[in-house]
Length: 66
Image (cartoon, rainbow, N blue to C red):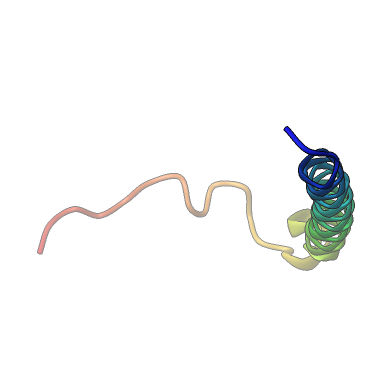
């Protein structure tokens, strides 16, 4: 094997390693952003007890006759 072949292989391996590291960093940022968005959506859900002032017996039975 000649020297240029070894140099080309080393360069290709270094570029692949760098590319993989960048891809992993972008993936981590995307996952963190998705987690933050999901948490914001969950926190935006209003408390059902504070909105409704309905009697507690409502919603307990379903009329199945049609």
